[in-house]
Length: 140
Ligand code: CMP
Image 1 (spheres, rainbow, N blue to C red):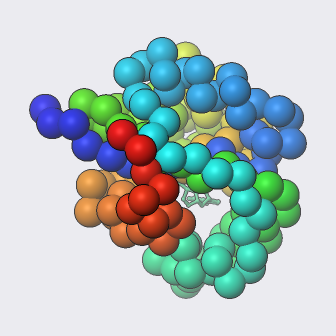
Image 2: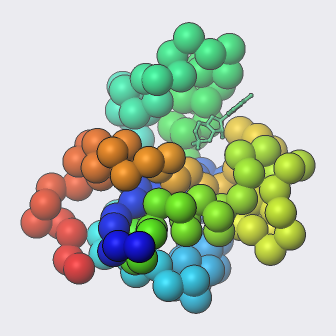
């Protein structure tokens, strides 16, 4: 295992319910360090580009609408095996399938309003981090 970085988003359903600190505490308790973080309101263009891989999916328009419906917190998390660790802590995309104790099981409202996003590979993490952060924004 190596120290690596992953990209995380606290989604509009989480910021709306003031869960930023609660979810961050779960990350920190599990050994992930928040090395960059900012609260933004994504533009439609930003969300469409970020989720471009899903452009052909039936849920794309709803997804973009949801992700631009309120503020989000974009983050860089660092730790041992951070990509896999973060995904384990988040739980399955659909909260109905998420394991007990995971963030999505505890907090997600639906498959769309599922509280958090996390990169699915180290390669995608690097791309997603670079989309929102300059290297100088990240303090390890
Ligand atoms: P996320 O990890 O942010 O990546 C794409 C998002 O699309 C996913 O989390 C879900 O919140 C959202 N989504 C909405 N509907 C679906 C669906 N039917 N299947 C997969 N993802 C969906």
